[in-house]
Length: 244
Ligand code: SF4
Image (cartoon, rainbow, N blue to C red):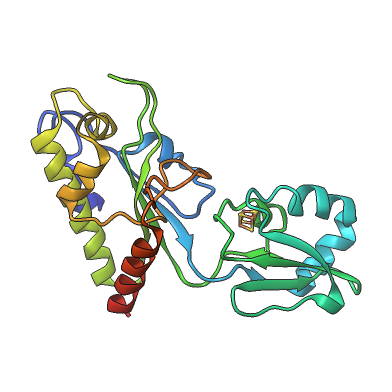
């Protein structure tokens, strides 16, 4: 990305500056969601991995109060349950790990929003899945013409394993920069341009179909309206079938 866009990054060749930021995981220590016109944040789409030996070691050191109050209770989407070991079952979309001879954790990965909290607290015992890629967001910035904006998800998951995958990322960056160059006002950041022209027009210009996995800000609802729920589900199923 740097090699492809270095000459374009700063005015006067563009209406105003354009920032890329890259974070390896959803902790986003780079603050890319707050500051970057185009943020690339590493994520995963399969199940959280578990390591029983490390989970038992963590539990022996920290105990039940911390497990319940700092791991289970702090999952923002209630994806984690404390379970008795005899009921613990991993499989399908559920990750499960025993922390002692009597108790364990079960994680419903369909409800996980990749906030990283449980993984940060029980590092190693819990770990991101292996099917990794990135979420692409556009429009983060600090105050300028309008107040601070967080980046908005435009691609919920992009695989970035091969040269072809990475070429697609560069292509998307080029599309966004070209659109910004042609449509932004003087001294306007990408997020402000999107606010002015409307997100739907921006996505339309990039040829990106809206999807319920796109969120306007972390841990909030999708910005996609789902009035015709059944038809939207049928469209998503058709897209998935075509991709498969
Ligand atoms: S990473 Fe997923 S399972 Fe873990 S606390 Fe966050 S939302 Fe819950």
